[in-house]
Image 1: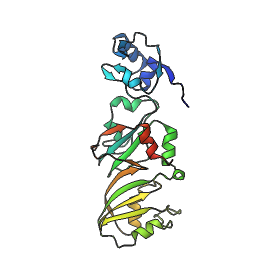
Image 2 (image 1 turned 90 degrees about the vertical axis):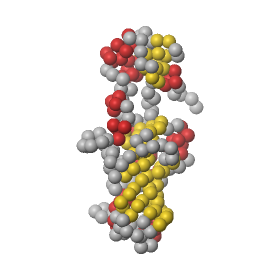
Image 3 (image 1 turned 60 degrees about the vertical axis):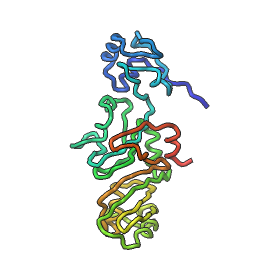
Image 4 (image 1 turned 135 degrees about the vertical axis):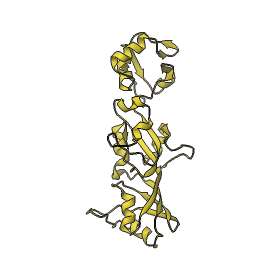
Length: 246
């Protein structure tokens, strides 16, 4: 079933995408900087059909239009970067074009990776999609590669899979998780939920310490080997279908 694309005034569309306030956008149009289908747009109040192919048809100051809503990205989050808008130090939002920080609706991280965790991080301006991915009811698996300070003792897989493991300070047991070991100090953990610092706290509960943590998969969406730390890609409908259960 097809849906009719939303139509927006050009000045509102570009303002929502962070290109500037409406007066600034109007000046850009006056200066001939906005082109659609090879022709300069002359009226900032012209209504534009916001179809998926619009970024391929419109340029702003010679560059393709930023993707309109809904926008979902995968980022290879580097170490030392925080999933926040307000904390001190490097932030994930600083890895994107500056105008993306004032898009409406705003981009939000789908869950968080702490400062010392790297890997696959999703960001979206689609609130409904965000909640579908993070809800434990939807059972979206998330896989983490773990490096430990001390060798495992052998009982970790059973403890994680039991559904009875309790984290310090909590009164509800964890959902079962799977552990695949590669060496005495390296493994993969796959979770069906995303509690605060969960992987680190799980290993603390079995008397070990995580010294390296990297997420490489959400659902069936794998972090590409050729996506460098700090780089990002816009997700396709096929990518999105790989995240959520069928």
